[in-house]
Length: 320
Image 1 (cartoon, helix red, strand yellow):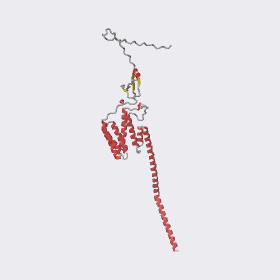
Image 2 (tube, rainbow, N blue to C red):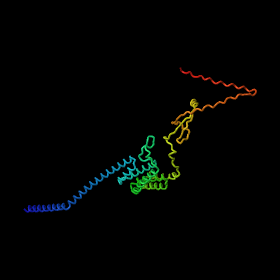
Image 3 (cartoon, rainbow, N blue to C red):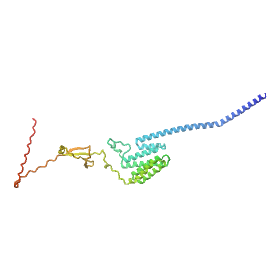
Image 4 (cartoon, rainbow, N blue to C red):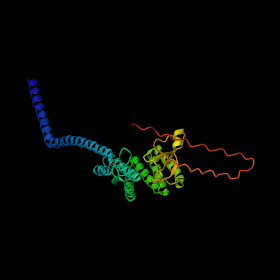
């Protein structure tokens, strides 16, 4: 009887204890459930948002490089600069676009031909409007210089972007050499060496040092020949042979003469393919003076032999 009563007391106490634990858990849930659920929801949403932003950045980068490739293939510097402005800060798209645009502008200025010009099969321009004047070529050089300097200024102090700054410094050095500004070229090459040593680009530094060593030789180098003094295979040459009928009959070799575009006549090179053979007009024979009669021949002198009679000319028979 005592044992049953004690068991009953234990069961009642245990139930009260469990009930108290349940009440405490319920109060805990009421107090912290909402904040915990909110934190969990924010973490999930943040992770999903980060994944969405990362995918969007990857798509934007792919689009930027695709547009950069298309602009590079077109060879239009204005398209490249537009890509640089539209995708500023998108990895390496901006500096690559600016450097490529500057390279195209500089090459165009050197050749004095507009970018994208078309040529005929003989190498001549299809449209003369694509030929640049001296003023236009100078303007192209100034535009290229601005882009090189912008890349060097923007990325020269950024770790990991030295390769782009080196490209800008090399471009500025090339422009300085074109202007024969040797001191400015040396400064640009020194900047290349500094950037290359910092980033570990040994090849670029060696090239810059070689260019610095060659500057003294470039100062005394002769200017390039003018366009008028350079002859190409498209310049017309006239090679003529002046032969007399006797030379043609006897097969006498005669050296041909070449008439240059400026009108000078010089000996033709061996195997000259283009010639216009002409026959010289035969000169009329000089009149033979009649022999004067000898009135008083010297004693013992032989008599002059009689001249041979002229051969008779027989007319050719005519057809009836």
